[in-house]
Image (cartoon, rainbow, N blue to C red; front, top):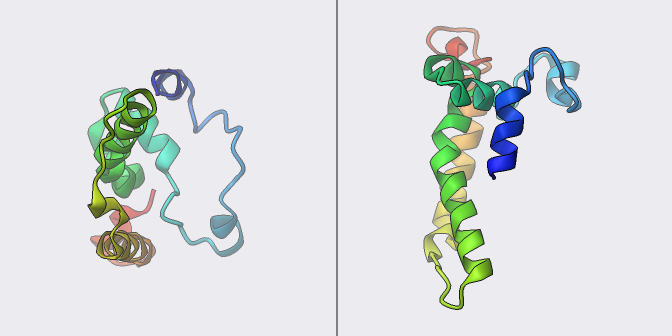
Length: 120
């Protein structure tokens, strides 16, 4: 995780992109839920919270969940006593997550204020 953070700290996603372009955006001009995530992580690592939220607010909101999941994975890989949370495996959690992602995807593509501020 630290190596990945260092990579994103020194890597400028706007100037050098070794990742493929978003197919949805290339074909339709619409922003997928992941559009702007690399720029958001880069900005956040440089302390630019406002810019990071502007690039992809959903990614920034999910960072605590991603970090916690990585911690649990590493903990469980190295310890006998496992951390288990049934909420992550519940249907309600997965449905809620899906609803949030779809809603974010739709809202960030609306051409009206304040929703157009969700687009990167």
